[in-house]
Figure (spheres, protein in one colour):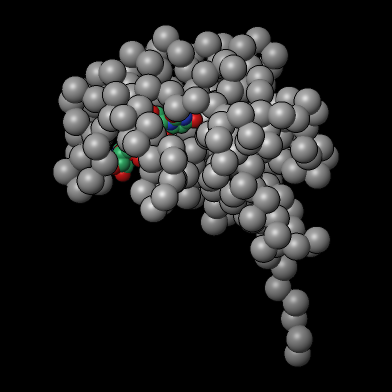
Length: 226
Ligand SMILES: Nc1ncnc2c1ncn2[C@@H]1O[C@H](COP(=O)(O)OP(=O)(O)O)[C@@H](O)[C@H]1O
Ligand SMILES: O=c1ccn([C@@H]2O[C@H](COP(=O)(O)OP(=O)(O)O)[C@@H](O)[C@H]2O)c(=O)[nH]1
Ligand SMILES: [Mg+2]
């Protein structure tokens, strides 16, 4: 990727896509709330494509020759939000790539997981890439999230799944990311689900809320041939 000020979204003044052609649902919730877990379920039942901002940043961090690698690494370890231009460009690139793969018949349904984590990101993405349909927000206590993250840390290999980084991430979530949820909430654009129970119970609630919002699972029609 080129220098930050050269990135496409940094220069555009109107959205790249219309929300009539491209559906984006933001997925938010504290670290360890279960965003990734629920997104995987939605992918198989609803035909969404899942884009995790954190995964895209980790991929860019590890890409040989990336000029942002060191900066991303340092930010993730400290739980700090990476400058939005980088994250938005990575998301836009991933969406573009997916649309090229799907071609004209594609449904262009995207779950954007772990983003926007800051108000400026939310505003900039909606102004320069595409406005979101709504935000799926997972509510979870810090005690539960901490337990899940420490357990995930046993095998994830993630530099931020340790108690010190987890505490910092909780703080950033409350101070920086919750204002995003509150702003979307004031516009009636938040679907709130409790994430305290097991993955299947949480998912049942997600499906119910999606139905209320008119988002239906994929139905496979079986055609009788004989
Ligand atoms: N509802 C749940 N109950 C118990 N454990 C869960 C639940 N959802 C996710 N987990 C586990 O908790 C950890 C964090 O989940 P993940 O989906 O990675 O969360 P996030 O993307 O919000 O950080 C993972 O190890 C996952 O397997
Ligand atoms: O839009 C984003 C999303 C993630 N991150 C960084 O990536 C880290 C991990 O995010 P991820 O969503 O993978 O963590 P999760 O909430 O799933 O545990 C965050 O703490 C931030 O440092 C960021 O800077 N901007
Ligand atoms: Mg995640």
